[in-house]
Length: 481
Ligand SMILES: *Cc1c(COP(=O)(O)O)cnc(C)c1O
Image 1 (cartoon, rainbow, N blue to C red):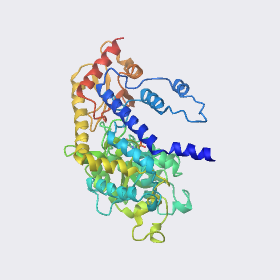
Image 2: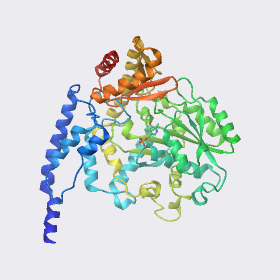
Image 3: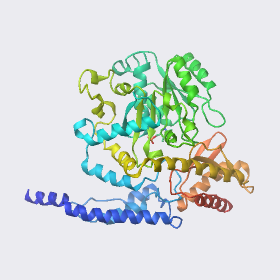
Image 4: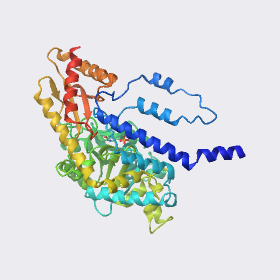
C-alpha cells in the first residue's frame, strides 16, 4: 500500500505536471509554427490503416516509462494536420489554439454536467453561450436549449422533441407504434444523420420522405406539397420539415422562408439543420443566406464547424425553450419534480449525455478573450475565399465548377482536353488519391448527379489564395502523368 501511495503521489504530482505541461505547450507551439510554414510538410502523412495499427501496437508497461514526450511526437507526426494551409478537406476546422488550452482545463476539472452541482460554472457558461447564439439567430427570448456531442446527436435531440410535439400520441411511453407511422420531409441533399435519426426512433424505411432540389441543390419549395401528398398516400403522418442551412455535399442553403410558411400552414415542426452553415448569421454580408432561420422551431449549430472550435460543441436551440425538456421525457418533468425555479439548471434532463464534458468552456472563453469580431470575420473571409476560388475555376477552361458556392464548400472537377469526358469521374478519384497520399493537399470528393467532383471546405483560416492556385496547378500536373 505504501508503494501504491508513492506511485499515486508521483502520478498526481503538481510539479511533474508543471514540467510536462510547459514542455507540451512548447511542443505544440513549435508544431503550430512549423505548420504555418506550410508546403514542404505533408498535410496527411498517409499510411494504410493496418500500418498505423502496427505502428501503435503496444504491450502497455506495468510501470511508468516517462516517455510522454516521445509519444506526443509520434502523435503529432502521424496525424492529419488541420492547421496546414493546404488542409481543405472535411468540415472540421483548424481550432483556434486557445481552445486547446481550455480543453486542458476541462479535462483536469472534469466537471461533468448531468446536474448543476457537478458543473456549476460550465452550466452557467452553457446557458449564456446558448443565449448569445439564440440572439445571433434572432430567435425570440423564449429560446433555450443545450449543448451536445455533435450535429448528428443534435438533430436526433431536436427531432425527438418534434415528435412529442406533433405526433398526436405519446410515442415516448407508448412506443413508435402507438399511433400512425410518422415521417419527416427532408431534402434529398440532407445529411445522412437525419435518416439515421428516424431509424433510431423506430420509423423504419419510410421515416424520411425525400424532397426534390433544384439545379443549385436547394430544396424546391414546390416539392413540399408533393412530399406531403406522397407521405399521406403512403399512410404516413408528416410531423416536421427539415431544411439544411448549408447542405453537406455542396453547402447549399435551402430557402427557409417558404419552408417556415409551409410549416405554419400545415401545423408542422420546422427544424433547421444548420450544423455547418448557421454560423452565416455572424457575417453581415452572408447572413441573408439563412433568412427565416429565426422562425424555426429548432436549430442545430455546430461550433466545431463554423466557430473555430475543436470537436465537439453542438448547440440545439428550441424557439419554445420548454420543448427542450421533451426530447427525453413525455412531460416537461421539471414541472413536477426538480428545480421549478431554475428548470434549466440540470442540463442532463435534456441531453442524451448523462456525464458531459465542460463543452461550453472553450466557446465561452474564446468568445470572451478573443472577441466576437474574429469569429464573424472568419466566416465572412472563408465564404469570400470560396467565391474567389470559384471565379478562378470558372475562368479556367480545364476546370468545371459544380455550382456557385453559397458558403465555404466548393465542388469542382478537372476536365483537361487530353482526357476524354467519359474518364473524368475516374480521373477525379485518381487525382485526389494522388494528392492526398503524397501529402500535398487534403481534399475530399463527392458524388453529384453529373458525376464525381472534388470538394474542398475552406474552413481552415490559414489557407491562402495561393494555396488554392497551387491546388489547381498540382491537379494539372497530376493529370498529365
Ligand atoms: C456535419 C453535419 C452534420 C453532422 O454533424 P456532426 O457534428 O459531424 O455529427 C449534420 N448536418 C450537416 C448539415 C452537417 O454539415
